[in-house]
Image 1 (cartoon, rainbow, N blue to C red):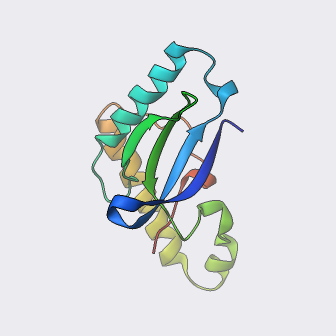
Image 2: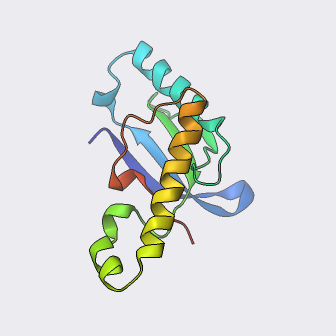
Image 3: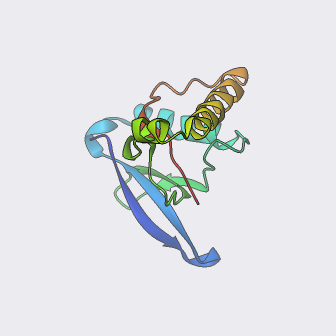
Length: 127
């Protein structure tokens, strides 16, 4: 409800990207918009194999903040059935995902960044 994510093509590099545009009601004033942009810039400085890269931050023609990142084509954690994976004997896959997630959070926390919205929909997978 606070944003909309679009699949787009970054023409200059011929690659698919996800563009997240904040909803007007999510950022009611200029201070909130600048705070959002500063948070995205902070995240963009994180370089870790399990932290999604921020390609660009900006504003739409209507002044709404957005950022672009790689299109994570394999969806999010909420779309996976860990119960089925564990029951199928794939406990090692579940543990690998948890280790990657905890490694990324530890890395961010060590640099003073707190995620504040860790949930299945924010754990993304690529190819």
